[in-house]
Image (cartoon, rainbow, N blue to C red; front, side, top):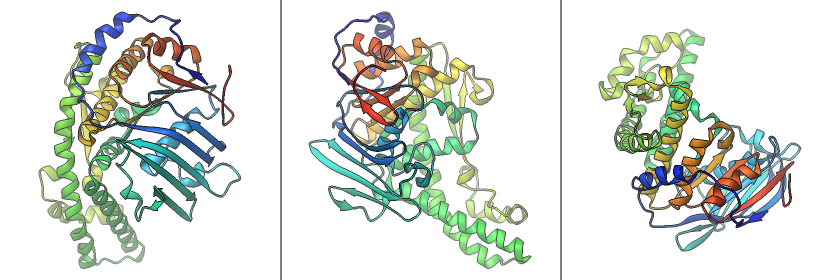
Length: 402
């Protein structure tokens, strides 16, 4: 573990001076501080038992691929969002051979210290506690400790299906608005039941319009709430995204985004009625907010089809920094920021620009993973920022060289 290294490497300071001051004008100031003081893992992925005392500033996890660096970031994310960022089920998150896992963190929030614990027995039980008080619902915890992660596969937000972009919207809005989260959970549950009913109709070669209408009626209110919130959010988010992208691209390009939903044009009840025969044929609900999309354009052209690799990387960074900023504005605290292997996926210029912004503008607590200890220290040391560096090998966090 390396603490507060002395300056010893150089990075082109012109990059920092060019980008960071301009970007600093974009970000809102936070009223409150949020950081993890200590993190404990038991039977989580490849960690049997591990305790880490964290820096309130920057924490660098350095090690070869497959050693468990990303798993530490995922533990932080899990404690904030009650699930793995990777999309793995709890059964695939628990360490091989174990029948439970446990995560614990001491978290400084504003002027309080919270003890947050996740106790998980896959396929049986999941409990979250704050200060030894059990949450009645997991959803009650989400948003208490806002978090943003930048990961290697984030280009999927742009390149993959609308489902990935909806997930990005839902992730952000669920941390901002508890009613949005509960509406989303309600909508998804009713949607699942409606789809099951449509499959049942097909299997039994029967149809009950009145029974289907009961599910339709239950979908209407949560769907409208979700649609309205997404529309309002995207309008605000787009302005921040545009500023981020223009500054990261040094004003060479422009970006735009738009929320697409049929509910913006047509009453949902009417849409369900118009599509009932199609739904019966396909045995699933073919229209609704679960089909909405976030249209992203660069210089007026759809980013999914026309963006270059460099433009994709700049747009991903802009999306995540805009997400961070809007969470900070609304929550009035600095979200935890997790940077997973960004050095291997971005060129040095973009990495330098990003870290200059993060470190010089006091983003709060940052967790970084990298395979090269010198690459981390070169940039962070130049900015004279306090940090801790941890060496990860086979699910163990220790001191010393790789």
